[in-house]
Amino acid sequence: MKIIDIITVSHPTLHVDDSLDKIAKGLFDDSIHCVPVIDNEGNIFGVITSTVLANAIIDESNKTAACAWEVCIREFPVAHPDDSVSDSVELIHKSQQNFLIVAENDRYIGLITASSLLSITDIDEENKNEAMAVIDPKVSSNELR
Image 1: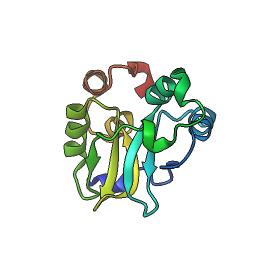
Image 2: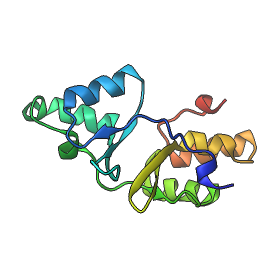
Image 3: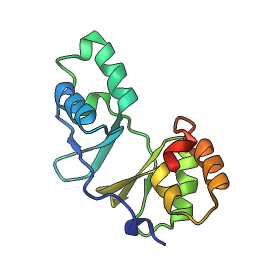
Image 4: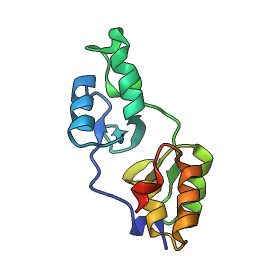
């Protein structure tokens, strides 16, 4: 199975110039934990996670002036739409992130989470919980049930 078959293409995105206020509203209102940041051409520029956002908000100097491009992380796992699911699971594990950006020629296509990847893999529940703990130790095993 290819990653393009299972990604979330309707996941919200942010523009590089979006303010921290807009970012916070989007993340907290939708209970989303990471949002891709794209430029004017639709290319992936970075990712803002809930942790990155919390750190930026705590830093008083960022509260009104910071834009998405100033606070986003620039190193994150990226897969090609034709990559296999198993290769994508390995990529998430190596990156120590709990998400994967899908892009082609830097153009953002979609996003998938570690738990979503594991929910479609053909492994038994005990091994799935073990794998999830390795990929994303912050997610409880109950979340996969």
